[in-house]
Image (cartoon, rainbow, N blue to C red; front, side, top):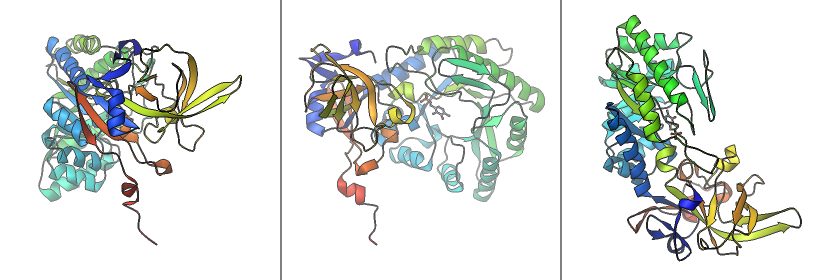
Length: 427
Ligand SMILES: *Cc1c(COP(=O)(O)O)cnc(C)c1O
């Protein structure tokens, strides 16, 4: 989100047609707010890009980015698939009424119980990641007299670092079957030999917050080569090639994200070079669907000015509701939601309230003059924010509100102190 693109009325930041300052008053802070029309519009951009290029496709929202019942219900309304990576995400999606046949189950160490749950709930596809899992699943399917669709997660030797890509031989990723060393061939053989598994296709995911189309085009090309190889060796042609997620978003002006049209257009050109049938293309966007739609509202509290050096402006949340800055130096931008019409007059560190020196939400932020009680809105916090929230220092996790068409709806309650002790037992 570019600050200049934000909407305001009477000096107040508007989110989805709702006054953010009123939201802070009504629900308290810290507060996660999602502009759901932005979520829907991003999904529709992906869909229309595929349709323009006449590709058969599926969009599977990588729900680890933000996994609460209400967002699964939005995904159901938008008629997309979802990825889950744990029994807990699967449970949440099912309890939201999300159809199990549209769920892909990922993860590099799914437990026996998780796989059993996936089989019993008739999950759409189980993404097989390693040999241990093939054995476990095979055993479960026999014992349950069940069958399931599976895909093989491959590490095709392409790694995308945010700004550059390389094509390596073997990869050292913890995920998936390495192609170069022959693990993928072995896995293919095991799965094709298992009468209870139906191999839908092959999958790869090259990273996250990726800019530029080059990495995805390289991946599409490589996956088609791998498909050709499997065709020669196993007489198997995939119905689906899953290219994973990782499409970057703009957290600040240095970030230059690619549009859905750009990268899907280029992928389509690459895929259509084949003489074989072009497989169905699945993608798994997480961040790009929910990231830009999310805002975190905080109340400004204390301030520390160190003469001739620097200033810290503290807010009533921090690493417990958004660990990304502390965890991997993620960059964000923020505005004062009740002073959108005032010029910037200071540069401060935005500090969280947690007892860690590293709990700095934003290193350098320009802001108008501030005073305690002002509402700070951090932008683009929708992905890997609430889903990574925790209770360090016994701070309750924030509430989550969805806004759309000028209406607001509480979708996750604020945790209470009673909630915090609800699992504790006396000794
Ligand atoms: C995390 C993940 C995604 C989503 O990545 P984003 O960067 O949020 O788009 C997609 N596929 C797999 C397998 C993942 O692990």
